Image (cartoon, rainbow, N blue to C red; front, side, top):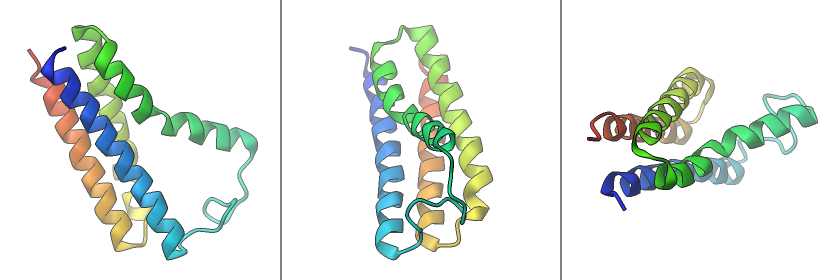
Length: 121
């Protein structure tokens, strides 16, 4: 198996764990209210959308290992670029220092993912 495929897959694992660690810290810090997002009770469609969205890193772990070179390269660039933009836009909405730190770590992982996929030959 190509080394870059393994590296890309590992980067997606790291990103997923950073996201999960942020969720765990938010729970223990008491920075959320169960069943609410920004003080609102979401609909089932919103929860479904969030579930699908959060599957992106998990799906990318598998795709990074199985897709052929061209498709793999562009799928990684597009997915990491999308999450980078999404997180950079959300960064100001997080009040806690640990959240901002973890978002920045996630942004770095996204940049490294794009770099590995872009320079993959």
